[in-house]
Image (cartoon, helix red, strand yellow):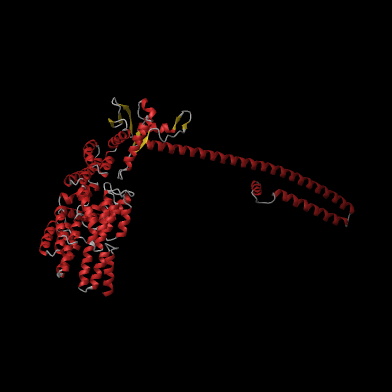
Length: 623
């Protein structure tokens, strides 16, 4: 019966079984009474009447029983309905309780996450927190309060951080009263912000800075700064020197709290002598070899920027010893070697390193660190790729001491892609000395591509003047002054070419260009002597072979020219100029298919060189 009732409640059976049986019995009794009455009336009217009365009584009894069953069914249905409603209420109550439990669990989870975040921030916090300074009441009417002085130091710290080109994670700087969270914890009257600060003070590694500002007897100002891990220091100045004093104090805090970032800042903005004065103390205070290695690398960069290459090489080697896994000083060492130990030594070290990295199959340094090596072996596509990777890695800021955009422009310029070079130069800070210098060099490249030596002279002479006055340009653009030797030679001014050659340095390109200048002046014997000297000091560099080959091709010595072009190609397989010259030689001999092959190979390394494309297309038509 239970199943039947549930079935009815759930929409199953239409009628209970006992009710159906009663109805069937009643119908059967009525029919039987009628049949008996008819049958007996044929034989004995009295029997028929008695039987009829009995059967009618039975019928009434059945009707009463049926009515009672129906009444009982209604009561049962009402009772079951009440039970169903109570069951629904119980289920709804259970759902509500479950929802409240889930909500409570969610609140507990969020609270736990928040607490974990507070604890994580506290244990990992490495910030410079600037608290309000003590200031004399006499300065308050002028607007100089403790918070104003602290805000000035904070602003100066932020400017220093913004001006530092580095991918090292820097410590954050903020004031002790800023960004407070005022959600109160129940029954304590303490805000979440206060709890956060207490946890940071107890478990964090923050550098907390404060101090005082006083008026001196002479009417000036003296700003004293002190803090955790920062020895007190006083900076004095005149009555109107508050901004200057806050900058000095901020630099002091920056150097004490973040020595590597400060060293990078100094070398990056041309304050290399100050970096050399700061770094010995910072190095002695460092407690980990990893930090010492990075500081030694910055030390080497400061010497490198001052064109003191031997000292730079020593610091880079020190950095490598302290942390052999640090690839940065190893790559920077290559930049110091051309002057410290010679161009040939730098080429060999770069070549060997690139071969070792290639054999490592992905286990070497990031591609962005291959800039110096690629440049020294004259692999311009790899140089460009490394420069672009460095630019992306530093989110557009470029390398630590030298911005990338001007040198990306230079790589494109040497690959005879003036449009791309101009695009990257336009993206570079025009105030940067490298941007100004590269603007001149790109003008020279464009004029030489047009074979217009006269147009190349003014920008090249301007570059030469800047190069002579700048130790940083001499360090980074080591042999770029040699281009003036070439320009003077093409302009028919061999005496001026000689003057620059004698002052620019012992570079492979200088020997190649000066020999070519002498050849243009019809002094072939002098040219050969210069080329022999250049080949002797740097036999693995390509330019002496290239320009001697150009002269041999022009003076009727094609076999010797082909040998020199092949030698230049061996020295720098990814340099397009030897392949272009070789293709031109083959074309002059009517070997159009061979010439086309050289042009095609050259276009792999200078894909947008218009003159090479024209030569390739002409050779293809005649092949």
